[in-house]
Image 1 (cartoon, rainbow, N blue to C red):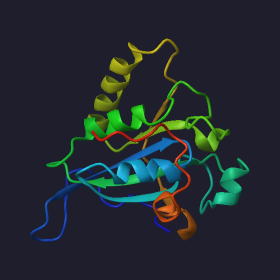
Image 2: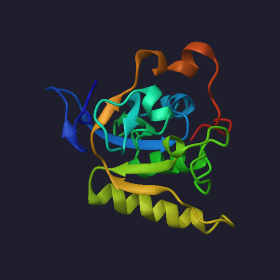
Image 3: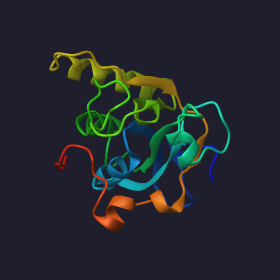
Length: 179
Protein backbone atom coordinates (compact mmCIF):
# COMPACT_ATOMS: atom_id res chain seq x y z
CA UNK A 1 0.00 0.00 0.00
CA UNK A 2 1.32 3.41 -0.95
CA UNK A 3 0.80 6.14 1.58
CA UNK A 4 2.33 9.11 -0.19
CA UNK A 5 1.54 9.89 -3.83
CA UNK A 6 4.17 8.76 -6.33
CA UNK A 7 6.15 11.91 -6.87
CA UNK A 8 5.18 15.52 -6.87
CA UNK A 9 4.10 17.48 -9.92
CA UNK A 10 7.01 18.36 -12.14
CA UNK A 11 9.35 15.82 -10.60
CA UNK A 12 11.85 14.23 -12.93
CA UNK A 13 11.94 10.48 -13.27
CA UNK A 14 15.10 8.43 -13.52
CA UNK A 15 17.91 9.74 -15.66
CA UNK A 16 16.77 10.05 -19.26
CA UNK A 17 13.07 9.99 -18.38
CA UNK A 18 10.75 12.92 -18.92
CA UNK A 19 9.22 14.80 -16.01
CA UNK A 20 6.06 13.24 -14.69
CA UNK A 21 3.17 14.86 -12.90
CA UNK A 22 0.49 13.35 -10.70
CA UNK A 23 -3.16 14.10 -10.05
CA UNK A 24 -5.87 12.57 -7.87
CA UNK A 25 -9.53 12.48 -8.87
CA UNK A 26 -12.62 10.95 -7.20
CA UNK A 27 -15.68 10.60 -9.42
CA UNK A 28 -17.72 7.72 -8.05
CA UNK A 29 -16.71 4.09 -8.39
CA UNK A 30 -13.00 3.96 -9.21
CA UNK A 31 -13.38 1.09 -11.70
CA UNK A 32 -14.82 3.30 -14.42
CA UNK A 33 -12.72 6.31 -13.50
CA UNK A 34 -9.57 4.22 -13.95
CA UNK A 35 -10.78 2.78 -17.24
CA UNK A 36 -11.53 6.20 -18.71
CA UNK A 37 -8.30 7.86 -17.57
CA UNK A 38 -6.31 4.91 -18.94
CA UNK A 39 -7.66 5.84 -22.40
CA UNK A 40 -6.18 9.36 -22.30
CA UNK A 41 -3.00 9.76 -24.38
CA UNK A 42 -0.21 10.93 -22.11
CA UNK A 43 -1.46 9.10 -19.02
CA UNK A 44 1.41 6.86 -17.97
CA UNK A 45 -0.08 4.96 -15.04
CA UNK A 46 -3.19 4.89 -12.90
CA UNK A 47 -3.82 3.38 -9.50
CA UNK A 48 -7.21 2.91 -7.83
CA UNK A 49 -7.25 3.69 -4.13
CA UNK A 50 -8.60 5.66 -1.22
CA UNK A 51 -7.89 9.19 0.00
CA UNK A 52 -9.42 12.17 1.74
CA UNK A 53 -10.44 10.40 4.93
CA UNK A 54 -9.49 10.18 8.57
CA UNK A 55 -8.25 6.60 9.06
CA UNK A 56 -5.03 4.81 8.19
CA UNK A 57 -4.95 1.71 6.00
CA UNK A 58 -8.50 1.84 4.65
CA UNK A 59 -9.85 -1.02 2.57
CA UNK A 60 -12.87 -1.43 0.33
CA UNK A 61 -15.05 -2.89 3.06
CA UNK A 62 -14.59 -0.18 5.69
CA UNK A 63 -14.63 2.57 3.04
CA UNK A 64 -17.85 1.14 1.56
CA UNK A 65 -19.38 1.01 5.05
CA UNK A 66 -18.48 4.74 5.35
CA UNK A 67 -16.26 4.20 8.39
CA UNK A 68 -13.16 5.94 7.02
CA UNK A 69 -14.20 9.23 5.41
CA UNK A 70 -12.15 8.22 2.35
CA UNK A 71 -13.33 8.50 -1.23
CA UNK A 72 -12.72 5.91 -3.90
CA UNK A 73 -10.13 7.80 -5.95
CA UNK A 74 -7.63 7.48 -8.76
CA UNK A 75 -3.97 8.45 -8.69
CA UNK A 76 -3.01 9.47 -12.22
CA UNK A 77 0.61 9.71 -13.33
CA UNK A 78 0.97 11.62 -16.59
CA UNK A 79 3.47 13.15 -18.99
CA UNK A 80 2.80 16.92 -18.97
CA UNK A 81 4.41 17.21 -22.41
CA UNK A 82 1.73 14.93 -23.86
CA UNK A 83 -1.33 15.92 -21.82
CA UNK A 84 -2.00 19.02 -19.79
CA UNK A 85 -3.39 18.90 -16.26
CA UNK A 86 -6.23 21.09 -17.52
CA UNK A 87 -7.18 18.40 -20.05
CA UNK A 88 -7.29 15.80 -17.27
CA UNK A 89 -9.52 18.07 -15.18
CA UNK A 90 -11.89 18.53 -18.13
CA UNK A 91 -11.97 14.74 -18.57
CA UNK A 92 -12.74 14.36 -14.85
CA UNK A 93 -15.68 16.76 -15.01
CA UNK A 94 -17.18 15.21 -18.13
CA UNK A 95 -17.10 11.57 -17.00
CA UNK A 96 -19.32 12.05 -13.96
CA UNK A 97 -22.05 14.27 -12.54
CA UNK A 98 -20.28 16.87 -10.39
CA UNK A 99 -23.66 18.20 -9.20
CA UNK A 100 -24.74 14.94 -7.53
CA UNK A 101 -24.16 14.76 -3.78
CA UNK A 102 -22.35 11.51 -2.93
CA UNK A 103 -23.46 9.82 -6.15
CA UNK A 104 -21.03 11.09 -8.77
CA UNK A 105 -21.31 8.10 -11.08
CA UNK A 106 -25.11 8.05 -10.97
CA UNK A 107 -25.37 4.53 -9.56
CA UNK A 108 -23.40 4.15 -6.34
CA UNK A 109 -24.40 6.21 -3.31
CA UNK A 110 -22.34 7.30 -0.31
CA UNK A 111 -19.68 9.79 0.66
CA UNK A 112 -17.04 7.35 -0.59
CA UNK A 113 -18.48 7.94 -4.10
CA UNK A 114 -18.34 11.74 -3.86
CA UNK A 115 -16.97 14.06 -6.50
CA UNK A 116 -13.60 15.33 -5.30
CA UNK A 117 -10.40 16.70 -6.73
CA UNK A 118 -7.23 16.51 -4.64
CA UNK A 119 -4.63 19.07 -5.73
CA UNK A 120 -0.87 18.95 -5.12
CA UNK A 121 -0.11 22.65 -5.42
CA UNK A 122 -1.70 26.03 -5.97
CA UNK A 123 -1.25 25.80 -9.76
CA UNK A 124 -3.37 22.62 -9.88
CA UNK A 125 -5.96 24.19 -7.57
CA UNK A 126 -6.16 27.32 -9.71
CA UNK A 127 -6.47 25.34 -12.96
CA UNK A 128 -9.14 23.05 -11.52
CA UNK A 129 -11.22 25.93 -10.20
CA UNK A 130 -10.95 27.75 -13.55
CA UNK A 131 -12.25 24.67 -15.37
CA UNK A 132 -14.98 24.16 -12.77
CA UNK A 133 -16.13 27.75 -13.15
CA UNK A 134 -16.25 27.42 -16.96
CA UNK A 135 -18.26 24.20 -16.76
CA UNK A 136 -20.58 25.64 -14.11
CA UNK A 137 -21.80 28.21 -16.65
CA UNK A 138 -23.17 25.35 -18.77
CA UNK A 139 -25.08 23.61 -15.94
CA UNK A 140 -28.36 24.42 -14.28
CA UNK A 141 -27.39 22.90 -10.89
CA UNK A 142 -24.36 23.92 -8.82
CA UNK A 143 -21.17 21.86 -8.99
CA UNK A 144 -20.49 20.45 -5.52
CA UNK A 145 -17.11 18.84 -6.23
CA UNK A 146 -14.87 18.90 -3.16
CA UNK A 147 -11.48 20.59 -3.65
CA UNK A 148 -8.88 19.50 -1.08
CA UNK A 149 -5.10 19.34 -0.79
CA UNK A 150 -3.75 15.90 -1.71
CA UNK A 151 -3.04 13.76 1.32
CA UNK A 152 -2.07 10.16 1.89
CA UNK A 153 -3.21 7.88 -0.91
CA UNK A 154 -3.82 4.23 -0.13
CA UNK A 155 -3.68 1.73 -2.97
CA UNK A 156 -6.84 -0.32 -3.31
CA UNK A 157 -6.80 -4.10 -3.20
CA UNK A 158 -5.46 -5.90 -6.29
CA UNK A 159 -8.99 -7.05 -7.17
CA UNK A 160 -9.94 -3.42 -7.89
CA UNK A 161 -6.95 -2.53 -10.08
CA UNK A 162 -7.88 -2.37 -13.79
CA UNK A 163 -11.20 -4.08 -12.95
CA UNK A 164 -13.14 -2.70 -15.93
CA UNK A 165 -10.28 -3.51 -18.29
CA UNK A 166 -10.05 -7.09 -16.99
CA UNK A 167 -13.78 -7.82 -16.84
CA UNK A 168 -15.53 -5.47 -19.25
CA UNK A 169 -17.76 -4.39 -16.34
CA UNK A 170 -17.82 -1.53 -13.88
CA UNK A 171 -18.03 1.47 -16.18
CA UNK A 172 -20.90 3.23 -14.44
CA UNK A 173 -20.06 6.60 -15.92
CA UNK A 174 -20.99 8.26 -19.19
CA UNK A 175 -19.70 6.54 -22.35
CA UNK A 176 -16.07 7.43 -22.98
CA UNK A 177 -15.27 9.84 -25.80
CA UNK A 178 -11.66 10.45 -26.84
CA UNK A 179 -10.25 13.83 -25.91
